[in-house]
Length: 622
Image (tube, rainbow, N blue to C red):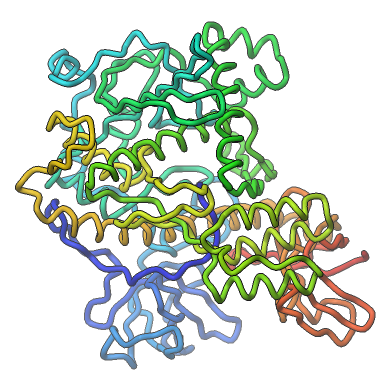
């Protein structure tokens, strides 16, 4: 689960772990030279935006712009900063364009060629091609599971288990497969099988170090920037239907009210029987579509059991105090030429929730199991509101004549859950949800276990996506070491090889690194979607749209169209009035007009800025 609230993370730094040292990033400053994205100004001067954390834009005087044009990726020589380590967001940096590294034709941003996403990749320093040594190791990976691997000691043969994968229609890498059945005693049996990526990504390898550096795969509307090369992510590690694959399994039995009765974690060899997609499963289970049901075939009864378990597990977590904001996701749809065909809000339906609940169950089970074994693990943590944020939230609640949260709410998810339930269906519901989200930190990774506030979970880690997340890969290493050592319970023995005595320190550093990489990936993904939205809207200047206020600042309001696309109305474009910004209530209030979250407005699109990924509207009527 990805909660998109802000949190300040530790400064990014290279940490030497089990793998070899990697080359430094291409944009690492050297001799006062950096790379960046050139933004031209009408007056002839310009700015270069680097992707270095904490840096302001670099000012380029008119006579030092040279041949650079808007959108170009350039190399800049800094002229007024000898000590780059002292640069802060408030610094004023100037420089000279030394050369144009990549020319960008603005006309190609709209032709479906993918140049728009290349622009995002260059601007944010997203990972590009894999280094040669990484590609060489990936190419050397086997194409299929050998009999020796399948029959290795401690690996169970579960190829007779009728497993399925359920993912998006356009998915290419499959981390997880599931099987569920209702037992005669009324309990549910759930098997979650996860790709054994650690088997193919050895410690001290180039693959390991590159995965550490990337931290996560990045999902853009038209492509994936993978954590691992396609030979692994789409090949031998992917749980492709009909092919033997190595996996790590978490088998669980749940009581009729969702309590975990027993579990078993082990290495396996599996063969997925069917590759299913969310749309087909939803059509079969929710819409009773005969064609979809026929496509599911023998998996249909199992999926109905999984749907029943989903309801049981969701109810169990709700009783525990878990929060469910369920905000829709903005989905970009491309046509055959790669151009934006449509942008729509997409909400999770039954099939997505079935897989989500199965993965949550496995993640919690693994986290508690290995915490009990006192092993250094990368946990997924989510802090509740601290004292200052709780105070700000309570001020807003009091202004709305709602009961404030108790001082203990930062450690009590049920109090927050009760608040959200109390405003369901009220005009203030959206405002309270936004303020509640703002009060909480961003979920992150940590070497020390603590409460996952959003899930109301005492134990939680990421285990289910080792193809695309480095923390999951580290969790797999702990599991495999434990299983190799023959441990299955709380023996208190050391699960890690003696040669890895630095492992606890490495886990701590990796948690920081993964948290930073996750935030960067989210920023890149948001920017990519914003650019696609701008491309979709650029031929609609002058058109009117129904919208709702989605954000309020002292300088204007943000509005969201019915399809979820957002833009801004500047304060000077609002009807003339004497406006006061009420930060506590996220409201602009004038003598005759006011703007608050959720207010309906009719707007006209006045400008589209592709370079800044910004839509500008003006109000037509309310």
